[in-house]
Structure formats: C-alpha cells, structure tokens
Length: 154
Ligand SMILES: Cc1cc2nc3c(=O)[nH]c(=O)nc-3n(C[C@H](O)[C@H](O)[C@H](O)COP(=O)(O)O)c2cc1C
Image (tube, rainbow, N blue to C red; front, side):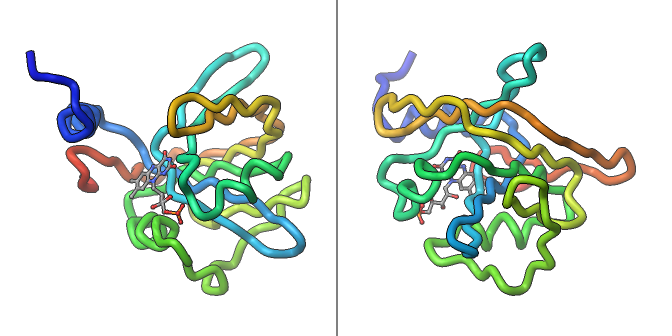
C-alpha cells in the first residue's frame, strides 16, 4: 500500500468512474453553475441526493445561501458544458435554460434533471456536503451519459 498524500489520494479516487453533473442555482436573477462529480444518491424514501463543494470555491457562498437548486446530469454530447462550468467565470448567456418550479433553471438536452431543496449543509474537511430532497425529476432513455475516469472524459 502507498502512503496517503493528496497526490495519491486524488489518483486513487480518479479510478472511480463517475457521471458528470452541473449544479445550478439562481440568485437575484443571476444564474450560477458548477461542474460536480461528487453527486450521489443518498436515500430512496424520502428521495435524497448529495454532493460536495470545496469551501475554497469562489462561489461557495452563493451555493450555501441558496435553498433550491438543480442537478443536471450531462449526456455524452455535453463535454463542452462540463468544461464551461468548471471555469471560475463560466459563460452563462449561451444556454437556453429551462425554467424550473422553484426559481430554478435546467440545462436543456441533459440525460437527467433533479430539482431539489437543500435540507442540510455539513462542513467536513475542506468541502461542504449538500444534502438535498428531490422535488421534481426527468430523464431521457435515448441518450448516453458523459463519464469521467482518470481525470478525463470517457
Ligand atoms: C469533472 C469535474 C468534476 C468536478 N467535481 C467537483 C465537485 O464535485 N465539487 C467541487 O467542489 N468541484 C468540482 N469540480 C471543480 C469545479 O467544477 C470548478 O472547477 C472549481 O470549483 C472552480 O473553482 P471556483 O469554484 O473557485 O470557481 C469538478 C471539476 C470537473 C472538471
């Protein structure tokens, strides 16, 4: 076994294949989005999901202050959207966001959407875990997901 340091830890975690999501919030009419692969299911009944955001993020305050959010699960054809929302200042205007029910926005043509209410935010280590109740959802059986492995899209 290797020693646990940040480099080995990151490399080992990168061997776990994930999907890629964009978590979106709207605050004071402005839209914020972040590329997130720490998304996971938490509970079926009630329907809960979770994801974590770095406390060092320039936009963590916005996400901490917002109650409603969407998780947009990207399709294989949306790699450019992942790249965009991994930037410190992403391009927002080029997306024809769909309006959600709770002052939320959805990215069109995703493989799945979850409209959620954040019910708990737990600070652990250098990240905060967001625990969210799923209020509305949809999915598309006809398209393929975007996957992330070894720090690359596959
Ligand atoms: C595939 C992928 C997955 C990511 N997943 C997460 C995540 O789960 N949590 C997180 O805080 N940042 C994640 N990031 C990093 C953020 O998307 C973003 O790059 C970073 O937060 C930018 O810095 P800023 O928040 O200070 O603007 C991920 C980036 C990529 C490319």
